[in-house]
Amino acid sequence: MKKIFIYTLIVFFILVILSFKLINNNSNNKLSTFVNTYKKINYFKKSNIDRYINYKKIYPDLNDEDIVTRVNLNLDYPFYENTKVSKDLNKKYILVNKYIYLPADYIPDNLENISGKYSDGNKLLVVDARIAFEELASAALKENLHIRAISAYRSYDYQKELYDKYASIDGVKIADTYSARAGFSEHQTGLVVDLDNIVLRYEQFESTDEFEWMNKNSYKYGFILRYPDGKSNITGYDYEAWHYRYVGKKIAKYIHDNDITFDEYYIRFIDNKKQDK
Ligand SMILES: [Zn+2]
Image 1 (cartoon, rainbow, N blue to C red):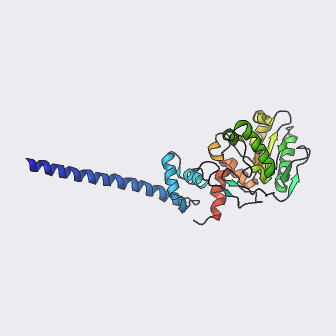
Image 2 (cartoon, protein in one colour):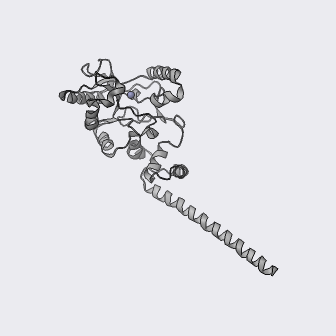
Image 3 (cartoon, protein in one colour):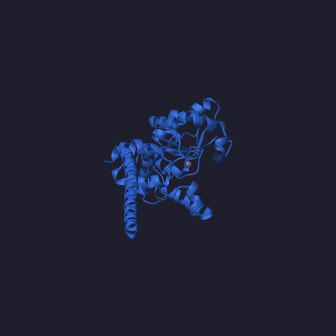
């Protein structure tokens, strides 16, 4: 009787060990399935495999493309950690966000004043963006809509003044949701305009006919809404209906048609061309 009991016990343990092995194998298979599909994505980076797997565990509902895109953007790190300096200075496809910054002494080439017809005459943009913006504002004006640039290029020092003022009033945590730290502001690229319609303040731009016109037409002139509603987990900023970025017509059209952020576009189509796999 005793012997039978011992045999049963042994068989039971063997079964337990076998089933553990099976479970283990299954999860390993699952992991290698993820990695195999990631590898097919052409902006996949070998060095990020562990981070992709960890990110998938945290966000199981995201598809593979989003996992790879977001990890490549460094979104698995807190904002302003693991930052690096931009290598795309003076390029219209430059990405500046909470992980990629501009040197303190960087001033873009070819800054020019926006016409006083569409600004106070004292706002600078890089020449291509300046020309495109004036074309855009003039097309809107033909429909009796007034698009005015109230802020454009900002120097590192000016951005520092702005951010420090906001942070002293609201604290760093809140200031970070709406203002960029010096060096991390897209305004320093000279490719950005903040808009109003002359009548209402820029914070109310979303409620204007000019905003609606921009929604339909800005991409035709190479401008995109840079911080869209509902995308702050990717862009790092609250929705800003007034902040437009010049990226050129081709990129603007793709972003408009596919409803993605510029951060995502940059990883999928620009960053991957520079990296070795
Ligand atoms: Zn802005």
